[in-house]
Length: 197
Image (cartoon, rainbow, N blue to C red; front, side, top):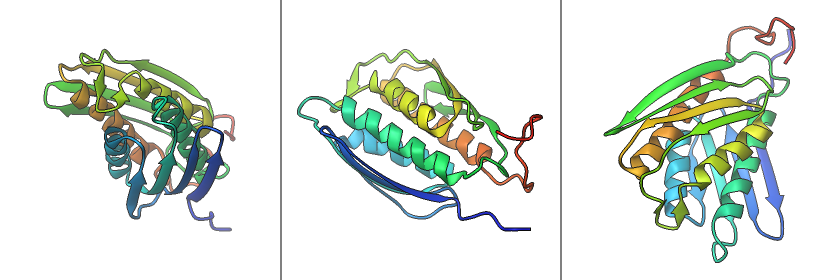
């Protein structure tokens, strides 16, 4: 029986709007992040920490326009790393969910890491922004991420009176669900009645 390759990936993306480099290890390591937004960096750190990832990510963009390009392209690059890290999409648990409270806020993530890209995102943010991060960009990040990662992800901000708390709970819930869904299953085959994902 051959052993699976290391669950790691590195991706670089350069466009006229952004320059992004990302190295990801699903099985842990240091977290080093640099983005044009302190708040977005904080969200990525929370997600990676709760997912148990090693993540080295540098995002350079055009914040003088706004953060949309940086946030969306970051999602694309991280999503691509996630897909590459799973290789042939065998040997992981695939499904997981997490419910995360943060003070008055409560968020839920339900994840299928099974090569079926889809995002349901529902959250009402009471305040429009934190620093230079507009909360409408949270859904743009997750949409880009699931498109490249091949995830079905349902994210629900069940309640929240503070947008910072609610957004952070959503990122943490995604991390917690990813930790379980991407964990080795102990089996070599894909977790599917089809036999392949």
